[in-house]
Amino acid sequence: MRTLIKSILGLVFFLVLFHFPLIHISTPTSVNPVYNYDIKNNKNISSTINLNSNEFAFHIPVSGSYDSSRQYEIIKLGKSGEQTLLFKMPLDKDILKGKNPDISFDKDGFVTYPGNGSFFLWYPKLGNQAYFYDQDGQFLWANKTSHYIKAFPSGKYLLSMAGDHSRAFYLLPDLSVLGSAEGTLLISYQFSNEKSADDNSMQVCLGFLDGDIVFYNPAKKTEMRTNVGSLTKSYACNFINTSVAVQIENPDKNIAIDQLKVGMLQAGIKGTSIDWKFSIPLLDRYTSSLPIGLKDDYGIILLPEKKSFIVLAFDSSGKILSQTLLDKEEFNDSGIEDWRISTAKKGLVAWNSNSLYIFNPKEIYSKKMPIENVTIQGDEIFIQTRTQILALQLAD
Image 1 (cartoon, rainbow, N blue to C red):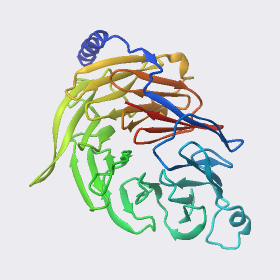
Image 2 (image 1 turned 45 degrees about the vertical axis):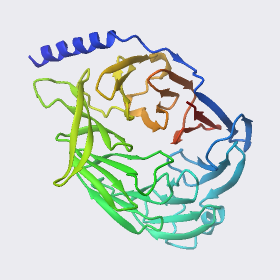
Image 3 (image 1 turned 90 degrees about the horizontal axis):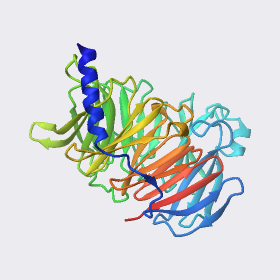
Image 4 (image 1 turned 30 degrees about the vertical axis):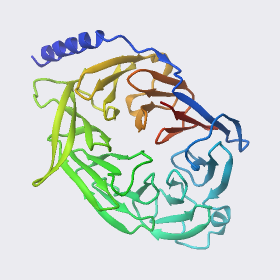
């Protein structure tokens, strides 16, 4: 019976999608290249227009991988891609010195910093110290911590996560604690990428496996917290209207497919609740988290389909806007876990290790290149490879 119901729902889902033609993937005029920085030769090789950002920071592993290295080279680039800062962290002299038993620079470590490079933190994979560098790359101090740390894009705060992912801490850059959130296995955290995010805005969103969802404002130490009512596989948050999209299993156990649900958090006298707007049945029951992106008036979810991927777009009422079948030959057997979706001011950005897509309701921008990381701030997108840093700007 379960298989029959699942097959019927899958057929209905396919027929609904079939009604919407595939969106043509193009290079729209709304995506403007800004600069292309040559990492190997430390110079900008092309520049067209200036960014709104004064400076933006990047890191390059000296050894190891992009995400974990004994030492990193830090670069700051200006509005048109000119280099404004270049240094290594930890510094060569600190690695060679080796006289302080509390310093473990001989191990691979992580680096985190805000987009504007107002400070930098390096900490080892195995150890209990974090090392703080100022905006000019000067070492300032070390402080004890054994948690995984990520800097807020604003540069004012840090998010620190316990090793078992049962608790998250909101910190100042000196590692003093502002507050914390507990739950059953933190599976998602998302920062606001809006340049306009200020002390009145929610700036981070946490999602736990047991369905707990938390929006937090570190400036005012206020939070909105509730539970979606189900074990949750994946989250996407919208900071403009504190809405959330979640991937959950169907509450009817006879229907063996997942659901996408979208709702808005609302603060009331009795606490925070969710006003659910709609739900969409998906093609299957998935063992993995599906990447989701959510804007005010539309969203996307990425579905695996026969060694390829379907991008399903929906509007704020749950109406399916389009489907896009990505070419399976482009992905070199990459799995759904390799994909990320982030929110830009004027679109949703999806990428994996060799492809990047920018979605809006009217068009899709596609770029094929080996990608190490993608960073977004407002309408600016920074794509980093092993050899170059490409800056794009989304226009109206």
